[in-house]
Length: 394
Image 1 (cartoon, rainbow, N blue to C red):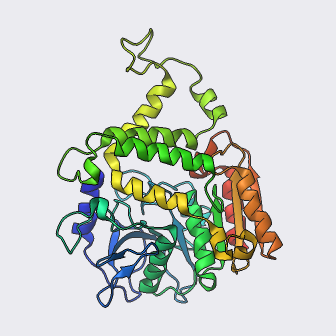
Image 2 (image 1 turned 45 degrees about the vertical axis):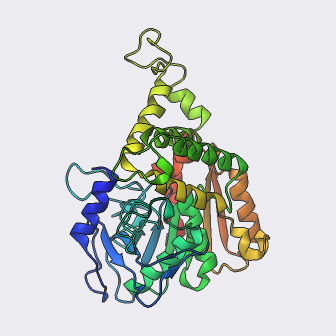
C-alpha cells in the first residue's frame, strides 16, 4: 500500500471521531480526529493557517480511570502513527516494536500509549497531499510552512480531545526526540517525564547540509513541476536520491564496513555493464532504500518536514540561551545518545544534558555503545531498553 492509498484508507475507515473518554483502549487501525477549527482557523507559527485539520493517531493499552497513565510517542521524519504491533497477520510491524508493547520498556499492559502522525506528513494527518477545503485541490506547494512547535501544539490539541491533562511521559527518537523536548518546554505542566533518544537541542551544520542536498535532488527532478505533481508522474527519482543521502547519515562507518565492506553485490560477480548499474552491496542497499521510500512517501511532505527539522532550536525558549530555556522544564528527563551517531552526535546530547543540570533539573544521560549509528534508536538495544524501563519505573 503506497502513501496515497494509505491516506485514503485512514479517511475512509475512520471518519471523523469525537471522544467522550470511552473506548480508548487497544491499538486499532489509525483513527482520524478532526480538530475543532470551525470558529477560527488553526494558526501556524510561521504565519500560515489551516481551515481544516485532521490528525491520524493510534492508541495501545487502556487509559486508567484517573487518566494518569498516558504516554505520548512522537515519531521521526518519515514514520507514522503505527508505533507498535501489527493490525493483521502479515502486516508490517510497528516502527518501535522493540520498545512499545506488552511487557516491553513502554509497557502497554501498564500504559495508555498514544502515537499521532505529525502535521505535514502524508500518513493521515493534514499535509501537502491533503485536499485544501478552500480550493478542492491538494495543497501541494501552497501548504503553509510548519514547525516542530506547530506539531507539538497539535499534539496538545489531541490530548485535550482525549481528555488527558497531564502525561505520565512523552518519548521519541531523532526528530521525535526533539518533539518530546519541545513538549516539555512548551507545556511544562503537562508532562512528568521526558525520554529523548538520539536527538539534541538542534541539528548540526552537517545535518543541515545533508537535508539541503536532499531537497535539491527533489526540486530538480523533472517531474517535480514546482510541487504540483498530483495526478501526474511523481518526482520519485529525486525523492529516492534524497532518501539515499539521508540513509547514509542514519548509519555508521563501522556498521557499514561490517555489513557491506567493499563486497560486490551477490548477483554481480564482475564489473557492471555500464556506469549506472550498482556494483557494490552497499550501493545496492542505499538504492533499494531510496526506491522503497519514494513509493511510500510524498515529496512535498519531505520538503516541509525536513525544513521544520532544520529550523528547530530549543534555545529559542531562552532567547538563544539553552540554559535559560531549560529552566522552563519541570519534568524529569532521560537523554540517550549513541557513540556512533553522527547525525545527532553524543557531544550535542551532552550539551543538552549539561544545560539541564546547570538549570537544576532532574536529568539522566547515557551514551550507549553501538555500531548502528543513528538508527540504533530504532533497534531497541538491551541497554537502551533497560534505561527506558528503569526511568519509567522511577
